[in-house]
Length: 238
Image 1 (cartoon, helix red, strand yellow):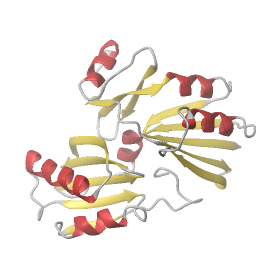
Image 2 (image 1 turned 120 degrees about the vertical axis):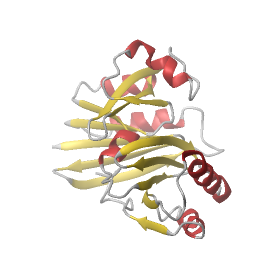
Image 3 (image 1 turned 180 degrees about the horizontal axis):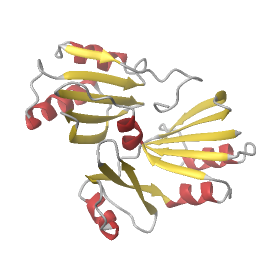
């Protein structure tokens, strides 16, 4: 079975084509100063028409989201809840829901309607998910206080967990070591996590973000690189 895996980040698209869990092809596209206005949309269209697929799996790491306890049912308020964190354009964003039963939380997130429609127009089975839910499902919380950081290209998502309870989740742009460290340290101070009592775990694009990790190690006592997104092997913590 040919499966197309798609990951959408704030400024990029990563795709992977697999057949019976073997990776046939993988490629990344990222917006830069010279990219045309509809660069990602055009690349998505090229990938969707590249060959025939049996299934599509879509992961959104776009930072239009809100985190709620499992069982929250006022879905009509999803857009308004997300608007507390990021600007929402109801006309151009599809409201989505992703539930994590392991930690008893759920994510409302939005996904560009243009991309949504292009993918649905293939008329084959499609699975949509939010990167935070998929990342959270891969975490095994063992210690009292833990910080889990999943690194992307110029972006990271971040869970603070204490005794199997989600204290905080965030998804933000990371363009410098200073921004990254300020975010981590500021968050720790606000939620009462002491540096020496907290275990840090880092996943994702660790090679690309090697400088970030080395800077973090100067301040953090307990840090472990758990998972690296090795090309043509692992895809979004599969």
